[in-house]
Length: 262
Image (cartoon, rainbow, N blue to C red; front, side, top):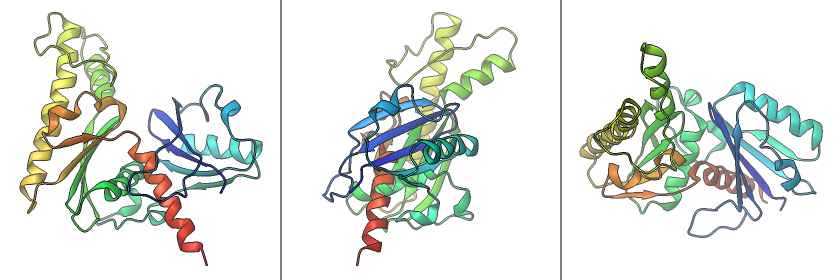
């Protein structure tokens, strides 16, 4: 089998995962051997072309950014014409989508739900993912995507404060940063506290309200770099799972090839 290049194109960044043996099925999520990230303004991370396999590869792309996906598609079709390239839609995923307009749901949210179905143990699941936006989505006990909540992420909130006020600076917070003190000792510290602990409170409230409507305690899976330190704070039942979107893309390809096998 040609290696898989799974691509998650978000609003501000693109993440690529290389799966050498994506066809292997076991009781765990397929994990990428190599993950690289770049801005959506460029088709591929700097130097990533040197890491690509020399032979044909399979590309599967979950995108919420039309211009960025066009950049990537043009590059692949020009530089690697033998590769199998496809932009995914919700119909390509092994997932029932119970919302009003399935075609409008971000493919990253749906791909993460596919991963949740692979690792949950018969119970509902709540999937929290943080990027430009923070999403909190519900997967039912029978494995359907039920919808969820979309909140502004750390960067969007920080930008809104900086551009919507006269004197507040643009503060930064990334998933690699440790949780800040609740009481900020300067303006930037106060903003960083608000960004982080405000997100903790919002996500925790959503999880509690979603859980209250369920007949059993759900699994809570947290993914996305911006939530690495937030995970244990939003729910005592949470589990941090890296690269759920990329793994969901690999699972979708497993299903696709399995359905086409004789």
